[in-house]
Length: 118
Image (cartoon, rainbow, N blue to C red; front, side, top):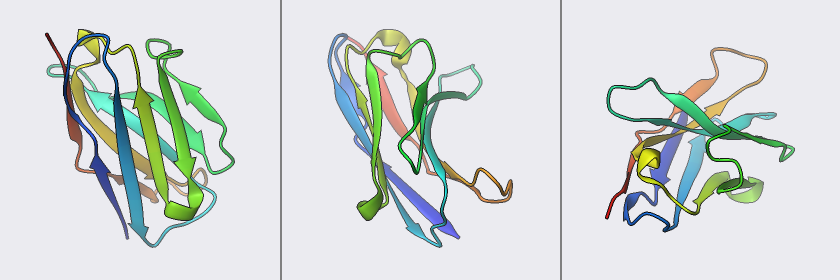
């Protein structure tokens, strides 16, 4: 089993910044893909950004240029730096760790709330 613990959410004004962190522990596997998803009230969960163990990253169009995903493999940690935040970025953000080869290896964190409001 794998455990994912997120931190760094909170309330921020429009235009502000936050950095989310997610630490993985337990039966870590490789290669892997770590990602951040978000779910706003009444909406489906969507992929925000993902990064492979080789540090190849991709982003949803709505955050490209504002958010940056990175990882520290030595610490089993993935980060999401969020800049120029907008009210529409308000959501619960979830960390995800999955294997690109085994569907059963797909794990989620408990989520952290990000609220962008003045």
